[in-house]
Amino acid sequence: MFVCPTIRVCPPPHVPRVAVGLGPSCQQNHRPLNEDLKSLDLPLPLRGFSGRRSFFAAIAISGGFLVARQSFFSVRGRGFGEKAAAPQDVQPFQINASLHVDPVVSTDWLKRTLGEIDVVVLDVRSFDDFAKGHIPGATHLNWTLDIVDQDNAIPNMLVDGEKFATIMQSHGINDGIWVVLVGDFPQVTRVWWALKRYGHDRVSVLDGSYRKWAESGGESSSDTWPDLKFQAPFTIRDKDSLVVDAEQVLKRESTVQLIDSREPGVFEGKVQVGNTRPGHIPGAVNVPTSRLLHNGALKSNEELKSVFEDAGVVVDKPTIAYCNQANMASVAIFALYKLGNTHVSLYDGSWAEWGSREELPAERTSP
Image (cartoon, rainbow, N blue to C red; front, side, top):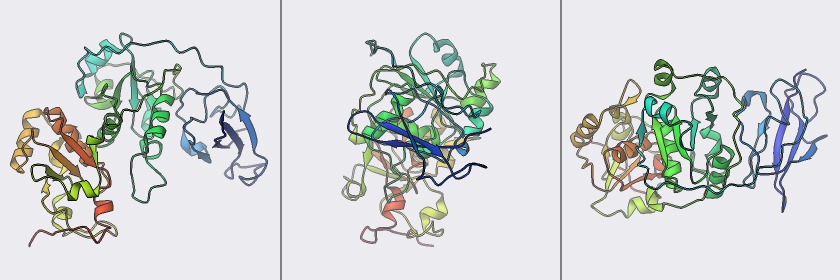
């Protein structure tokens, strides 16, 4: 029989507790969520896991701790068994500062590197795609839930540093780990930016995503429960220069470029998005994300430079980018960084915030 649980984190003063109970979608013997919940104390931190979320009534993270691992829950319906084993003693690690971190790495590089240095492959594709096949040992991140501040009125805002650190640790990522992101644009660049924003510089995007890995003969796995080892803490090192708010955009210096990554019709104000005002932030130049990509992949450096220059963007000047919800704009930030520009920032609130605040100026392109 398949057991459909609800998993909730109850953050207490010392050791968090995981409350487990039957969810309303169970076909039999089900009860309301607030009845007959059983508490199970688990040693923390726990290993990370990636589960088929449609199986779960709820999965939440609170107080900075992950909620589940395979040893006490199984998607095959074995129910609940032994508690998680106590974590191993933390072994000191050394960060090799001499390693050069390219923003994009090849499948050949990854094949050579796996097993030689501490690498975590973080797959940000949909879970269905991940379950069909992924790089062995990869762990799945549902970035739209796990690193998005669900309590913020502005959609898609990045979670705070404490929560972000907990999520990264749950995936086996610490300060000495090289993170290789697998997925499509703009998902990979959004997560790349988030890691950089919180001070983790050892992060790269896998060229061609999993498709190119498979085509090159790379091994594949369908195991959705990677055996992640306990890791040392993920240290937050705020890089505030990588993110700006509305007031900083409004008061930016004249030397700072502003890129609007939306499509021309939206930028010009001919197409309205949701309940926000039509138009764009005064002084912005339009560089649609679609012009930076070809068949879903980032264009070559020469092509990227040409696209930016044709739009009037100087590739080595300080630049802020925005779009509707700061997803597409992360591609522009990543592309400029790839071209050598480290003075880039993302307006996380983007037009979802700016277009909703009547006191902020907006303009439309004359017909």
